[in-house]
Amino acid sequence: MSEAAGGNKLFVIILDHADLVDELMTGFLDLGVRGATVIESRGMGQIIRQDMPIFAGLASLFGEATGSRMIFSVMPVSLVEPVFALVEEVVGSLDQANTAMCFTIPVDQFRGIRH
Amino acid sequence: MKILIGLSVLVCLALVTSSRRLWRLRRTTVGTMLTTGGWLMLGVGFVLGPHAGGLVEASQVEVLRPLVLVVLGWVGLMVGLGASAQLTRYVPPRVVGVAVMDALLSVGVVGAVAWLVIDWQAELSLGAGDLLPTVLLLAACAVAWSPEIRSLRRGCTEARPATMVLRSASGVGSILAIALLGFGLAGAAPPDPRGALAVAAFSLPQATVGLGVSLVVAVVVGVLGQWLMALAGRGEGEFLVVLLGVVSLAAGAGAAMGYAPILVAMLCGAVVVNLPGRALNRLQQTIIEAEQPIAMMLMLLAGMLLDPAIGVSGIWLVLVLFAARLLVKRGVVRRLVIRAVAAENRAGQRPALGVMRQNPVAIALATGFVLWSPPGGGVAAAGQVLTVVILVGLISDCFWLLVPWLTPALPVASVECGS
Figure 1 (tube, each protein chain N blue to C red):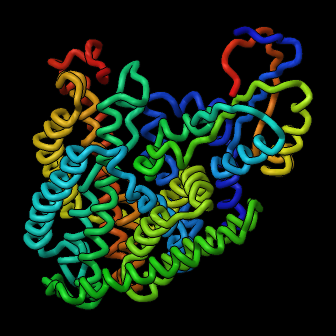
Figure 2 (cartoon, each protein chain N blue to C red):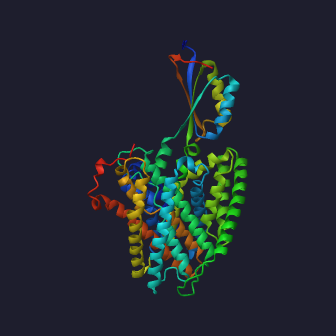
Figure 3 (cartoon, each protein chain N blue to C red):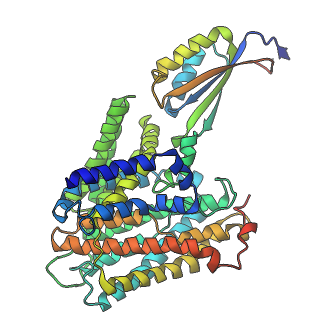
């Protein structure tokens, strides 16, 4: 079932602190965001470091402990600014390094079941 | 003036190594080995040290002790973070078996060879005092190998069977090496700088008590550290201060009690990684991100602490130890690694040759040995042991560069890492 696309955005968050995912998800629900996908990811710096481990060859294999998280969520345009505010409230100022990066992409078409 | 020159050298080096152009060089085979082996910084430390450039004098070396403790503590904590209860999810039992077999063979063969050579060469001043601590160190340094395998594989991505087996077995081996040396040194007396080479008795009860006390200290520091890290909140500065405090406390407590600081720090890391808490992810990220600067500092300090006056006897020891490594690693361990690689055996052959490279933890252990030895004559002897360990590592890495010519029957182009 296709959905009218005009008012939706794909909100993408690249979160350096994986332990903040729970807090973000709770905030999403409070704001009325109906779904999100979280995947483990690694930044370019991490890949270069893990490519040349010296002492931490074993610890760096535990991806969930050393990687970042990418969160994708398709949401109405009206929720975008509140979600930006939520992210800043949870991770701190986005102007600081090693916190999070967020951006939105317009969604032309959206098909799928929304819960 | 000397301090100014030394600082200028270090600042220039820092600027050069952080340059983007150097990133490209670091991703070549030789560049990767120079970086992960730490040979570049080792060379700089030697040039700055009392035996070459003299910018750091022999009397000032003792001042470096607290810095060495912090670096050893950081390395120990990093290695200990690999001792997670979730290890079995990532590391299959056959890989742990490879690491254990490697440890047993390396300690047995290299330890026996070291014992015979040092005992036979009566004039050897290495480890003057007691034979056992020196032999234990040399044996522990032979365990495991470098986890860096980027310079070994050809056109393979990271998550391949050979890659995983080599890195994970190396990590387990590092834990075993530190545990072995810490346990052994806890049961042996520190070298006596006044006495001739003599065999010291090993006291099992003393070693067990030492291990137990180290574990208790590690648990206390680990629990305290986790609480403080949670209090630090999201402040980067506060978190780093707490982390440095944990590292210094763990390593310093170990050294103050006469035990290996790297062992206490490793046990602390093992405790922290298995405690629940939100600060853990952040700790692991911070610890691992600082890996390369810490490694550089360790190599710099090792270069300053080494004593190159090992004489002909010392060179004999280096060559014999390397030959023993060659026998164990290339002869037996390599075959175990190939068998452990789930894919077709041929796929693991070239990467498996990486087991010849010395584990960087060996330099940390040998540097800690210098601290463990009493000051005065003991330090000079321990500095020579450090030199032996460094030379064995250097030869092992150079051997790796010669492999394509030494193994012409192995068609490198057709070898892959497995699917």
